[in-house]
Amino acid sequence: MPEFIKGMELCEGFFKEEAEPIINKCFPKLKYSAGLIGYGSDVLGYDDTVSTDHMWGPRFYMFIGDEDLPLKNEILNALSDCLPYTYKGYSVNFSKPDPNDNGVRHPEFITSERVDPLIWIQTFDSYLKEQLGTSDLESIKPIGWMKLSEHRLLSLISGRFFKDDLNLTDKLKPIRYYPHEVKLYLAASLWSFIASEQAFVKRAADCGDDTGSRIITSRIAEHLMRLCFLYSDTYTPYSKWFGTAFSKLKIDESIKNHIIKAVWQTTPTRGKKALS
Image 1 (cartoon, rainbow, N blue to C red):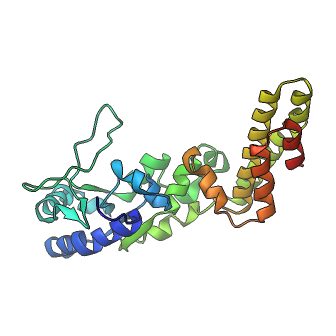
Image 2 (cartoon, rainbow, N blue to C red; image 1 turned 180 degrees about the vertical axis):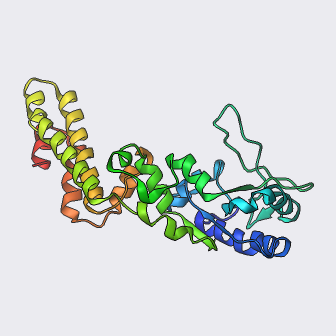
Image 3 (cartoon, rainbow, N blue to C red; image 1 turned 135 degrees about the horizontal axis):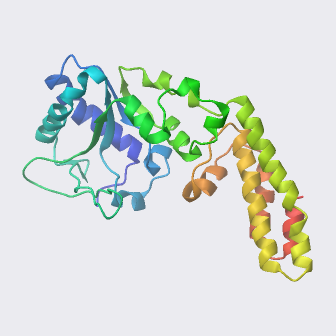
């Protein structure tokens, strides 16, 4: 197994050293943007050796204008014909999408014929519509923000463009974080939930329901953690990376310690004290 390289570094090197020269040679006048955004622990920087089993490896998205869409298959063919079989020990070739597993693809080493790389080519507007349901990021109304996946917002603004002829970095600026009025609504909602259940931690314990008390404590702790993200102007990832991202938030360590103590408490009344 090759030495592990963080996915973002691997993909940027793959694009600049292998893919970009091919594209520039075959399509010298093409204006495009390319990078790693969207799904994947490598986009968030949390990937490790476990992440390498599927949908991970030398890969990137390539965005072109509507006028260049007819070139899509030509570009893919040029890359398939000219890319190497491996890059820094990782397979450039991937299996066909598995229809029984949400289209997941796995690295598949080959030594002959054309490679089938993990590269997507489309317009940025079509990609945004797939991810958020809209490409008009400047016109999202407050109620519209409530319909957006917070993790998807995070995955879009956490990525990196290795080449950006189309100035897509600027296009993403409107979704860097929630508008002020949306942030206030979310904060009020979280505080309201906490206030409605805070007294139940001890009440459930007093009735002999230690399990219920611990569940309520954990629920309140999660909402407090979400408030920490909110006040830090940082989108919250989905559950897999929730605790990891929280540990990296730049907030007072005493806040983190109180929440951690509450979650790990062994006596329900201690949970109440930790959250006080």
